[in-house]
Image 1: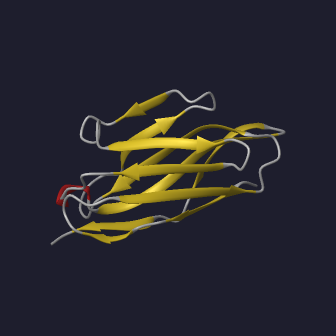
Image 2: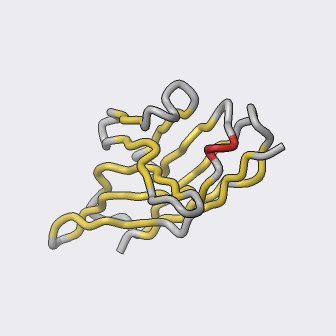
Image 3: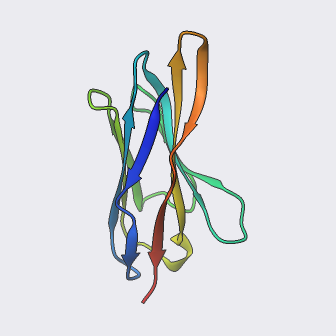
Length: 119
């Protein structure tokens, strides 16, 4: 089974930058779409950005122009470059992948990494 591990979260001041990484292990048949989600206290988990295997991307309106999602298919790693961070970006950020095994496709989630934006 594929496992995902996020890293790169932390505390940053408004206007600052962070780069999140998501490393996938146990990949045998491949990974299709990958994405970053976030969940702030008291709120539902929401999509931040998604990227297909071919590199097509989708962003939430709230992060367009500030965040950039990318992936390295050779090393099964995904990134989220976050610039011009705002306090409202504070949340636990989760990595998600649509993986494939012999039976079909299945959803995989990482454990999450905390991003806090505060002065």
